[in-house]
Amino acid sequence: MRLGVLDIGSNTVHLLVVDAVADARPDPVAGERTTLRLMRYLDDDGTITAEGVAALEEAVAGARRAAERLGAEEMIGIATSAVREAGNGAEVLARLEEVAGVRLQVLTGAEEAELTFLAARRWHGWAAGRLLVLDIGGGSLEVALGMDERPDFAASVPLGAGRLTHDFLRSDPPTEKELHRLRRHVDDELAPVAKKLGRLAAPDHVVATSKTFRSLARLAGQQVAVVGPEERRRMSLADLRDWTPRLAKIPAEQRMELPGITPERTYQIVAGAVVAQRTMKALGVEALEICPWALREGVLLRRLDQLSA
Image (cartoon, rainbow, N blue to C red; front, side, top):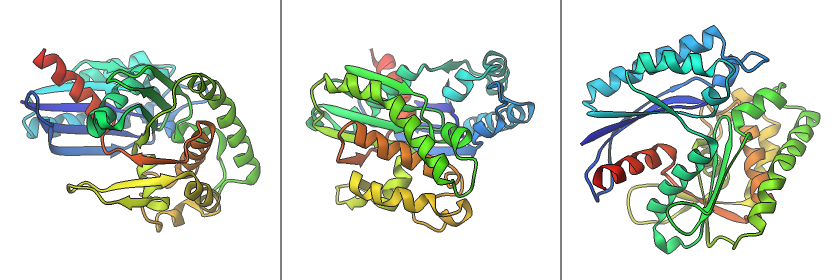
């Protein structure tokens, strides 16, 4: 069966199409992505502007055409924090459902964390033991911890790289005052999460998903030798602590010359690096491994489980 996931996120509208068979790993057919950086299109009251809605509609229409061209038999549509929290979110969602031709499920932050955790668990397997999963999106940070396929703890914190760039880092490169305010805000938001996790058993393995973590690991991490074609990287807190202030001193246009920093991430990678570093520090994580599967794969896996039940 050919399945597609249309993911309307804070940074991108992303289509993933796979060939799926029960009890087998989903085989990717193609992916198509439009970078929006939706936080640019928010008014001060959190409403998505008319320009932003038009950009969303265009991206979703393109994804629908691609899904039809690729022969997707079933489409799953999801929307995450940017649409979920927008002042006109319900109205925008209705328009996008019409354009997409499918119902869009608006995931809660906890659902995002749980589905991302499922993907990481399936990828790393039971041998990974107690798993801690971190994911930095455009609008939020997801944290999940557990031994099984459903985490014992799942939380979503409004610490997305796009959101924080929009709210705190208005200068390019950011000023030290802006960075100080951002670090304090991140630490304050993380404190309750760290306190709750501190009451639970420590993880055996820590992994991170999302483009932000992958970009940072390409820059500050080390490649791990593994079986198979997928590149795997590990990143230490010490390396990230070294790179974060260096990134903050480089103008956005020049960051694209660095390994792993793509044009769509260059404007928000500093905020992403601050969140990654402060999160690892707050949760006592000295090193983590990058997981290639994330939310979209978790959505697909959950649907496959339903089909085979």
